[in-house]
Structure formats: C-alpha cells, structure tokens
Image 1 (tube, rainbow over the protein chains, first blue to last red):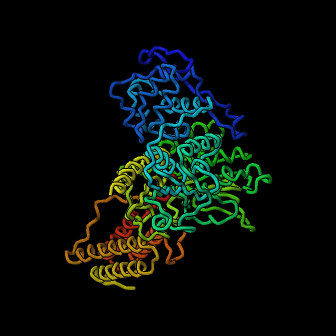
Image 2 (cartoon, chains in turn purple, brown):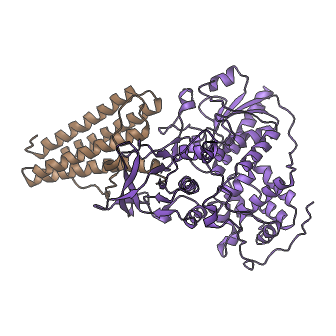
Length: 477
Length: 150
C-alpha cells in the first residue's frame, strides 16, 4: 500500500485541471532535458479527484488499447499508486511512453464526460505519473506468466507494435524473440522522438519490462537481408511471425534542390541526433550539420521535434514551413504550443517549391509561395492553392523535410508472399493483423502508414490475441 | 496540327487517350514490383474510361462542362519529373501521371488559342478542362499521402 491517504472526489467543475510544471522555455531551448516535470503525488491525486468515476466510462472507448482508465484514476485518487500501475499494465506495457506521447486530446480525453462542460481529466498526465512513480520505487512488478506453451514467435521490429505483441504473447506463455535492425530497442521511440519529449532511459526501462517477461531481443538483425521471413518459419523453428516494421522510408516533396548538402529527411536528422548522439560529436562518431538558419517542412509532431531539436543544436533561427493554416496542423496542440514558446517561427500557408544552393552544392535558402485555402472539395477538405506571384525566399543553411514517412521496402521486397498495397504497405486484416502469408501477421505503421504510437500498440494487441488463438489451435492439432 | 471540325479534334483526343492507356500498360509490364504493376494497370484503365467518355461525346455531338468544380492545385508545377526505371514507386507514378495530364492540358489550351473558329475553340477548351480534372485527381492523391504532413 502507498503512504498516501485517499482524497474525496471533487464536485464537478469545482477543481481546475492541474497544470504540469515544466522547464522555462528559454532555458529548455538550449538543453535536451525533458520539458514537463510530471505531477507530484499530491497534484496527481487532485487531478484524479476531478474524475466523475462514471459507471459506463466513455474514456475507455477512446483508448485504442482499452485501458481501464476509470479504474486506474480512482486508484490514484485513493493513493494506491501501485494499484493504478497494475491496472494500466494489464492493457499497456508501455505506460510511461504513452503517458508522454499519446494524443490523448483526440482519444480518451476527447470523450471524457468532464470535458463536455469543463476541461477533461488529464488522463495522459495521470498515466505518466503512475508509470513514473513505479519506476521511481525501483521495484517494477512483473505479472505472473501463463505456463510455457512451447510455441516460438518471431517479432520483427522493437517499436511500439512489436513490443506490444511481444509482451502480450510472453504473458500467454509463448517464447518470443524480437529481431531489431538497429543496435538499440524501441524503433521510433528511440530514433525518432527526441529526449526532451521522451527520455531514452524511460524507453529503455519499458523495454526492460518486456524483456523481464522473458522476451529476447536480438539487435543488428535485418530481416529480409540476413535471413528471410520464410526461413524464420521453415528453418529457425518459429511457429508465427509478427511484422512491426514501422514506416521507415521518409517522403520527400520531390521539388528541385532536395539533393543539396544540408537537406535532411527528419528521419535522418533525428536519428543522427537521438540515436547516434550527434550533439556529442566528435566524442560520438556521427556528426550533423549545426545549422544556423534551419527550415523544417511540415506541420506534424515530427516537424515540431525536428525544429525543436535544431534549436537545441544551436540554431539561431528555426522556421516551420507549412502549406496550410494552424487549424489543419496535424501536430498535437501541446507540441505546437511548446515549439512556439521556444521561439520556433511558424510560417503558415507557405509552400516550399525550390531549395536553393550555392556553387558548392550547399543549401542557401528556400523559395516559397504563399498559399490560401480553397473551397472545400468533394471530400470536404479545404486544399491549399498557391497565390499567383507570391514567391519569396526564406534564407536557410539547413533544411529538414518532415512531411511524412512511407513503408521501407527492405523486408517486403524479400518476401514476395506478402500482399502489399500500391504504397508498399502490407495488406493485413483489420481485426487480426493476418497477412496473405500463412503464420505471418503485421501491424502498426507498416500496415496503416505513419500514425501514432498508441494506434500501433492497439494493432499489436489485436494481432497478439489472434496469434495466440492460432498458436494454441496449432498446439491442439 | 490542324483541325477543321470538332469531330477531328475529338478523334485526336481519343487517340491520345488510347496512347496513354498503352503507355501505362507497357510501363506496368516493366515494373519489378507486383503492386506497381497493378497500380499502373489501374492508371491504364482510367485512361480507357477517359477514351470512352470522349467517344460518347463524339457520338452524342455535345460536350458539356463537367459538374465538378476545378481548383488548380498546381502541384504538378513544382514537382520534379522522376526518372523512369523498373523500380518506380507510387508517388513517382503519380508525379508522372499529373505531369502528363498537365502537358495534355497545355496542349489543348494552345490548340484552343489558335483554333480557327469558336466551335472548335470551345471543344479544345473543354478538352483542356477534362485534362485539368484528371491532373487534379492525381495531384489530390499525391497531396493526401505524400504531402499529408505538409
């Protein structure tokens, strides 16, 4: 039991949403430390007291992995923090990650009943609090595993989808091996999301939890090159394979100048800094261009991450260049707010059409056009259209293209049995993740295209249940 | 290129749609990836449906404006034409398609400009409008996926 005494439920609307303390914007713009500090136990209990504790909680329906949100929030209010963690971990092996990077405002918090009249309960912050609290105790509880089934499962990729599948299947008694192409686990959590938004020791700790469930992780293992999926099944003795490859192939805009020196994909830029520690060059092996004037194309979370990373790498001026207006920006409001606070320049309704370079092939600027939003088309979307004669140049010595990612073809090209769609994504059943190849499942970004961590985890969970069913049926035959 | 009647102009346009369908079919046969073969064959089918529409116009003798409103997204103006290899991806195929539709549109606008009479000018303007709609369809698909985050 925790030493914290229960506190009473607050009357609806009588207690304001508890803000989360965070680093000063000026100060944090020059360091890689995490921006928010998280709730104290007292803050968490007050925030939890705002929950109406609905009999039929709608928040759960907004969670892709179906966490018993009401259950864990009540436990926090009661001061039983371990109880809260246990409830969350029943459905989510990565709570400290999800508490930080899930778009709660468009999921669980969007359907929170408190939010109809007031600001919704800060479910994400409470999830983060519970996970951080447990880690701070130094005693992460490992649930009891089902008896060993004798079935072996290969999981390709240790990102959110792969880790979820691995955890779920290990709990059910299967022997799971994850094959990770990089030298560190976590996929996008490790190479993509920066330290200031998701500290890497937190990713390591959550991966460690999955490892403690008995999951083995083999690094530097590029499936499709070193060994094929077919060989995993036929020669390596695996009874099923899950493909959680992520969306590792960056899209470029296909405009002139994208081959100039100083143009990065966000994938490359963030991998250099996050995974390869380019901020510590030359002590680390990998450099990155320390741009002074950095232009980032795109308006999603990855664009915000790249822009804020450039600032921390010492850039004097960082601009987000986005074709639409603030309203259409796909990034989380919180991320946009943090980026603005830190001084990132938002060039909205601007379309980069040409990257300019000098005689040595280095970036010098970006030609942009002003855009306006047109009338809604048949799909109801207002598409951006260029304003004639509105050309102007943004000076830049570094450009980061952060407009999205597609499917990396490395594994799929070596696996002709897999059916792909025209964008190269694996075609898999929505409910089960089954692919066209017997015994092979897939989920996350490699199926649905670049999306969110929690959607990948939701797909992983569904696939794990279907795989378990199939594996147990095999055992009975 | 000289045209005396609307029928001649439409025959020319129909021939171009047939050539376009053949282009995508042949390109599909060169592709290494099965999904790209299928995608390019779908594009060939679209060209065949454009051909059928123009045949119907020629037979009915009236060429009315489409109901769809057309806002020129101008994506084709800024993207670079990809090198055509057997490893084309779908984003490159969309660029190729939107660029082909854009040049067809330009051609018809030019033919409208130099048309000897008003009837013929109207036919070419309508053909340009059609190609603009086709271009926009490819631009919108490109925008929805490749430029989704921008």
